[in-house]
Image (cartoon, rainbow, N blue to C red; front, side, top):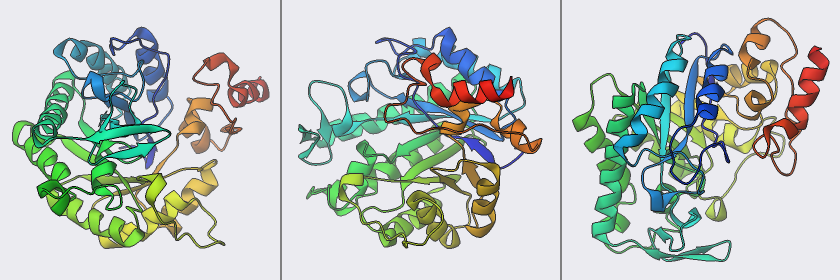
Length: 335
């Protein structure tokens, strides 16, 4: 990697359609990001199964026909000598299907999920593995397993949500253990497997414990964010200068020897550098800043204005892109 600035996975709503196939807009988006000077690009949450999507316009890797489009994304990023992995994902109770599933019966946003059967869990594990194999065929350098942001895997990992009485309840990490072991068994030795995890699952002590296990399982990095936000304790000190996500990552980092990524509300280069040094983290993830300015990393290195996300209540960059106020302001200041 050229530097320690990562573009984290951010779903581009309304780019594709119900097919989940990559379209030219996706390719152009990641091609533009790749030119921006970043050390690593992680492609947005990509569904392992059509019934597990978070949105009807989410990219997919649930069938072989989707490989070709992803190969074009991988190729355009590699053309700029930037490594690229793709995040693979199942939404669980947060999904858009008429019937949603979870580790146990749970209700979120007035939507109730039923508990998965053992056979269904095994199928989902196989779908994660199949998606990873397709990612490797597409030319990605690896995959990031999405185990955060209220989605299915965090619904297993969080002890307040997972109320199962079988093996997947006794060992709440079992589904993750099975997925990575099966991925490792069918991909090349240099294929990267990372995980996006919650720092508080539901407590920071549990997050640290999970991180240690993830390292022992052979994950290559930990991209630390929030887990099941409806059931977590946030111990961030009131005077802490960065976000709770970064605080959680900084608490986890001393306990593992693999790279730990920090994310959330990192708005300028000075702040990013401080997080890397003070928080003892290995990578900083610049999300919304990249949506405002594809050239964020290059501008940071040149000590130029990188722009700023204005944190609109609804992210207009995505629907539609032309209405992003931060992007408009950045280009106005550049002209």
